[in-house]
Amino acid sequence: MRTRGLEALYQKPDPRTPNPEHVVFPYRLRGRVMDHCDHVWSTDITYVRLARGFVYLRAVMDGYGRYVLGWALSTPRDADFCSEAVGKLLNKGQCDIFNTDQGAQFTTPRFTQPLLDKGIHASMDGRGRALDNILVERLWRTVKYEHIYLQDILNV
Image 1 (spheres, rainbow, N blue to C red):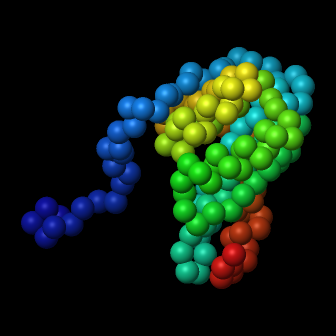
Image 2: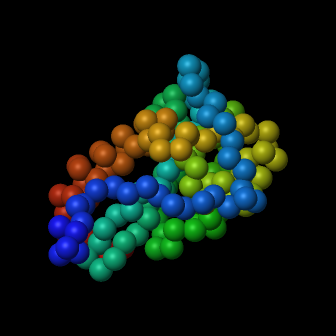
């Protein structure tokens, strides 16, 4: 394989380094019981493949009721997309703990500072730990397998 320039397909280590200006908060949900609405909100982003590119879908879920509080679609995957959508949600109500992954769009001060200003505890999944945010990951599975993959979506 080496002499022919072939390489096995496998997941390689991700060499991205986090922005030193961004703060990574500890994971605050380990062993915690979600016993009332608006106790824990979780958010994540997934991509949706279209016939001509991708769009990014972001959702915020309540950890107790397991319902979607808000969602948004965007073509660029940037911090403004997440910050604006969550800002609108925080104008309607707030939670005690807001859980995300360690993506750059969630560690930027534009995203975390409004949470901290309202007294919300920021929580972030461990690096590479998708199960820490299992509620939203399960939502993505349901949305993709029961809706998106069954249709030929051309554009948004």
